[in-house]
Length: 308
Ligand SMILES: [Mg+2]
Image (cartoon, rainbow, N blue to C red; front, side):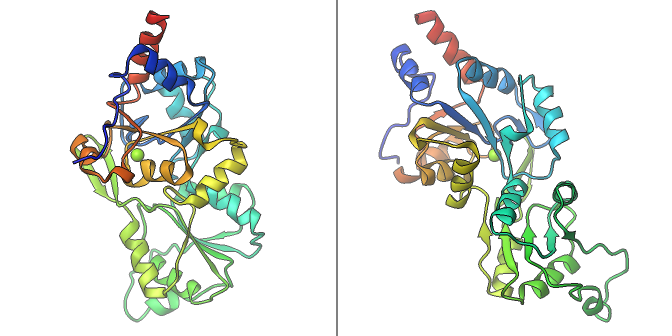
């Protein structure tokens, strides 16, 4: 059982609710399981974001899902009614990889095990991205030729890629045999909650396969890695981590990330974590607050304005 009581934001007194919203200036929201399910909507999330913005909060989105292009995110946020959404308001592993590539001045081509929109996004901003696409039937006789390194790579980029193939994995191991080729990874989630009724495996086990086989440790630039916190701090000029609230549906990725970075944390129960899991977690892994969903912010602000 939990060593401490975690308050539900709607069970706080009106005074405590006021103190809660006054305790942060920046709200960072995970997307899948918080703003929507990967392939289904979640009621009230857009309105909740607008309520936070109307209260002067800077609302940012921090997702481990790079499978959508900026245009798709603009459409999605527009579709749930979020006002004034800018593509710079969202960060996902591909943007963090780009930040890392620039910061570390990686000039050689990079080999991408990332989704097609991610690869397109990197190419659009001038990164020389190589991929292995083959329609040939793979046999023991042609695997060696097909996965032959085509050039020296500055990095292998690994992320969620729903059309990942065995030759691509094998080719990546050959590039990673060069110790100067960096290994940069997002996509460490172990499950992908697509809709309320469908969850499929994530990509962390395939990453483990790459790690085990190559003996290489990837540089992780996605939640819950502290490196992502440093990237966010630099990009968004975040002054005081305690004045940031991280909202997510995963204890292992969102709450852990928020705690690692010194943010306040709020777990929403609209995604991958059942309430029992939150209560059963060790005290040091539990969030500061919880809510049923983002929509609870709408009621929270209604309570505050009623009591004013
Ligand atoms: Mg999530």
